[in-house]
Length: 389
Image (cartoon, rainbow, N blue to C red):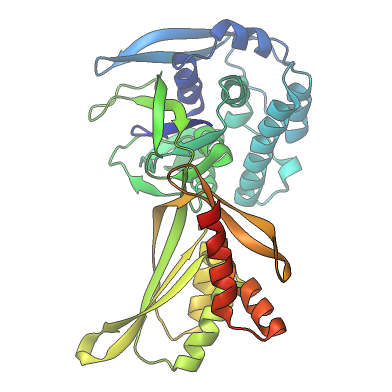
């Protein structure tokens, strides 16, 4: 499966993303031809070879015929994109990104998404950046996009609404539940357009997945930075089929004043709310008190919900959290014929690219109770299938 890793050591913007895709093999002439079918004019495109810190890449430039900007609403952008000669998937994904931007801007400015006047991200250059990126990912056949943690800048930036703190309010709202860190640079490192694009496409944030790299592209940013090359690097290749990498959030807290009954109920609530794993570990705490460390693993989007359950169902006063990567074997649910009828099992691909079956505990338990037989016999029967396959 064709996979890409976006290495954002100098942040990400829409034009840098397009530049990286062009540098990795996207046809500029084909892109330019497609973009001309959008219901906008008054611009021309350039793709120039430029260097940052002696590393050459492609700088994608949208040159406007006039500096007069048009403040478009969401419906205006829908009309522009719908008229373009792009696949249905490209149109839908582009519109999905703008709808996400409208929702974020609406929350910030206390308006409904349809009432929002797009300023910077409604300009010709931003529309082109978003549609070009979506088209480029489809054209290059990229199915999975992994993204590094994002470096954020500080300071202020001028916008149509006046001076705004960096990261811009729309940017930081879009990056909720995404691993970020302070770059130490007093410039905008991640733009709202860049944030919207990576949030829309990334299957995981963090380390590079196991992959064989076939193409590399560098998108060149406008500024020259003192402490790093202002480039966005994309690595494209084939992901190793037997494993997948995904981002998870890990929540932790230590307790020394809760009863086992309440802890058991807390675990039930966490699993019901989407926790992927919950572990209680014995620890020795201050004043030589024996205690319990609670560790919860979940999807990043469930962080707030799981944290709230820990606060409401335990005596803790604080919860630590971090985003982490985990590598998992490919797996799916399956059904097999057994002496007790059809039963559900996990079908897992191992490192040799061979499938094997793992018993589902609840399914085996149900069969054991219904047939008044030892649970281990059902489990052993399922495991024996792997020896005969």
